[in-house]
Each structure stands twice: as C-alpha cells, then as structure tokens.
Image (cartoon, helix red, strand yellow):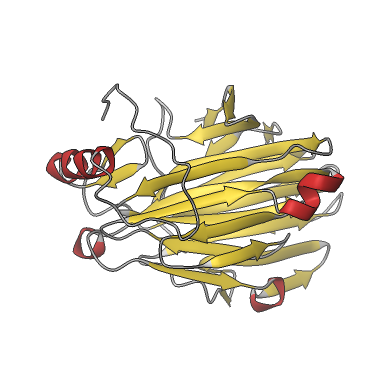
Length: 290
C-alpha cells in the first residue's frame, strides 16, 4: 500500500511564508510532534525581518532550528538568546510562558535571509502543567554521524546510535539528514511513529517516489530504505504516540479543554508572565477552535 503523503498548502505567519504539514486532516500528530512549520527560504530587505510579538503557550515544547539566518529568542523566564544555523532553541511552556522571536537588530538593518523549521511537541500529561524552562544548544553540541554519503545530525531525541542533549519529555526522533546522490539509508523501527519531510532532492522510498516539500508517514514496524537519486536534504521525525488525545487552540495545547479555557481567560486578562522589556503582544483571537 502507498504511504500517506501530506502536501501542505502555503501559509503566512506575521509576514514569513511557511508550509505546515502538521497538523493536517490526514494526520494530527506523529509521535509527540503536533505542529511542524517549515519557514521557507526568504530574503528580507534592509529594514525588514521577522517580528513575532509576545505571545503565550501552555502544554508544549517548541524547538527552532535554522538552516540560514538568525533569530532572537526572548521569553518570560528572562532568556535572551540569539539562535544561529545548526543550533537547537528548546523552550518548554509548562503551565504558562510567553516569548518573542524576531530578526536581530543588526540583520534587520543590513538585510538578511531566513530558512528553517519550528516544531511543537506536546508534553506528557504528567508534566503539561509543570515548570517552564529554556535550553539552547550550539551546533557542536548535537551529535553527528557520517558514513557512505549519509550525514545524520540528531537534533532532539535519539536514533541511529545517536542521542541529542536536548531535554525532550518523551521518546522522540528529530534528525536532519543529508544524502549524496546514489547513497542509501535504512530507516530502523526504533520508534513506533515516524515520518520524513523532504526539503530538497529526488529520492525513492523502496520503489515509491518521494516529492520535495511533502511529509510522508511511515507504517509502524516497517524498515524501509531511502535511495537518493540526487543530493537530498530531509528531516526525520517521530517518537512514542501521545499518552492520550490533545486539544489545540491558538498557541495552547492541553489534554483537558478546561486548561485551554483557563489559559485563554488569563491571557485576555493580562494575567500572564511577561517578557522583560517587551510591551507589544499578540492579542487573543476571537474565534475558538479545538
């Protein structure tokens, strides 16, 4: 049987063009991954850039990973971190956090490029209302293997005999893979749920062609072989299934809709941790969806 293939439509987040294969109608999550944004390669002229104003989260962790450009991360814990390509910017929301992401001032003045990914991972029920925290890992902190034309960097979680230092909260697979033309990669069944997202290149999964900018969901237990027909760049995601269904409303993720209602009310009432030095914020959308 052919694999499930998700072809995400083009969207826009505060002026940054994206593709969002998760969540979709065909697939709500893969392992803990409930949200996957591909920030498409974009050139910002001098005086322009990303400016995601102060906004809240609960019940999830975010991970920003860039291929080009830089972003400044600031949050209500007092974190103030510049994020460069190949680095992992990991924020766990817990019961309440707010953060900002924007182009650093010097790159806004000069003009810059941006290309990268931001993902959300749902927290296990036991810690979804726990303490917030932020961790930043340099590119050199993330383990890499290279063999026979295949280079794997484990951004978060574990697989392929690699373990990332990023403090994931449940079994996770999040890897960046580069393959030279003609190389092959066996994808082991180390995690029950897995998917691959092709950034660029032509490849086949067994005898099935895999198109760029699509998310292909693997079957549980299978161990397929990827064959690179050109130089390829892709991401592997997955992990253990969520420990129960999740509600997602705006920037809030929770196992209980009452937690989302509480968070919406608190953000609207400005009863929320704030990012030091920030006054602008994104207001609560009027529509309510789960």
